[in-house]
Length: 383
Image (cartoon, rainbow, N blue to C red):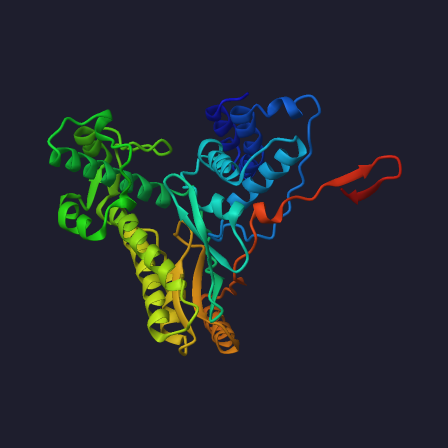
């Protein structure tokens, strides 16, 4: 099969056709990882792509496409893929063929999502913990800012590099604390930033992290940053402290958010705490360099114009545009408040946002539909 490097170079030749990497990349990954090429090499195949997931809005449109194609190929050619395998292969499409340095969250959500539930995911590297039912007194909406988002963009990539730089610095500090020789370039196999408690990060590591560092300075002092899907540009400056702090604090916020969501009884304390966690998360994205004026404006409108029915908001996905997630009280009043917010944003930005609500089933829950074509009478039936 074609190598990942050659496939990536091929799809980058023509920007207008680079989107095809998300589709044909699934074939490359299946051929290399599961020997799938033998199934279609002799017969060939045709792929029809149709999607209602908003493109470039930070709601996993690329992951949805990768997952759908892999699901269809696996069913058509009788390949057995469990949900986690499907998500991990889809991530390989994005990382190794498309060349976008994304994590596993979007792919796992596209595979394992369920209606009216949030997904608790441990990204080390991709373990589904469980689903968290959305309480009946809470609703979630997605509001499109109108600014196109892409995890393949330079902002997301540079922030990811800075985060791994910070991890490398902390790994070296940990090795020094234990007074032992660093192994494998200072990489600690079981060390994840999300496993560091916020108080420990603040007390022991934060002050040792540079605010920024050039690629050449980092390479000279620390060597490689131990990330397989990004490279360090020696001539570029990278933010380090803020991107490194984000996963430490976001992991704590996420666990607290999950615990608060378990209460089916509405209380002002629960709702205020959930809202504050969302606002903190949004502010953290901005500190990393992944915010933008339009998503900030939507979050500000929730804070200023909520009328007590819209409660919290944060940017989604890889940031730098895309969609803002809004949380509010379930009911007509919140729906009306949201429509007023959308109208005000339209007047201020000359853009009418696309709005969607709730969560939906992923590929695993949806399954698949087989269409059987009778060439004799040109009829199609469900199989």
